[in-house]
Length: 132
Image 1 (cartoon, rainbow, N blue to C red):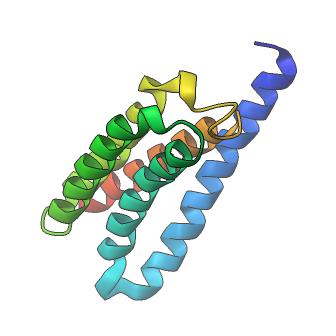
Image 2 (image 1 turned 180 degrees about the vertical axis):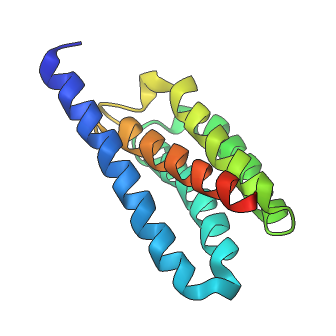
């Protein structure tokens, strides 16, 4: 990986952290619905990859729909067990790492996984610390 690519990945991860902070600030405005924002966000994060697969690599759709079903279930249960939302966001970062080959190029921009991982881990950390 070139130095330029490393810099782009690092900047994308930092941008993801920044976007997570913006989401937290916005979600905290709706205190009574804050968990809903994070739960819906987790489902949307999984749907991004399913949508990209539908458009560019239909052969990946079964795996992506499994991800949508799993993260959707975690999001729903997380509404009743908030610590599970934190775990769900951390697992989504693992999902990003587990399937890197199809995350760049044709499906999504090469920087997108780093942005998503930064976002996921920042949000997971916030939610984990919030539960304490």
